[in-house]
Image (cartoon, rainbow, N blue to C red; front, side, top):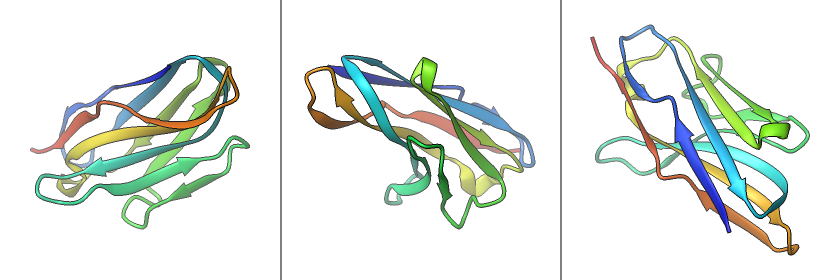
Length: 120
């Protein structure tokens, strides 16, 4: 069984920064892609960013140039550095981890989500 826990959310003023963390634990043999999504009130879940096992990164148009995704493979952790935050970045942010388990199963797991609020 694999679990994912997000941390680092909170309240920040427009123009400010936050760094989210996504830590995976459990019966992990290898982690493949790690991704961040977000869901604002009344809206559908939106893909934000992805980092591959080789370190390749991809971003949604709305965060390109402001957000940076990274990972620490030794810690099974991904990070989302969010700069120049805007009120429209307010959402619950979710981490998704694709992995290969110790019994060679492929799986994907979501974190519980963490709230980011951008407000004066």
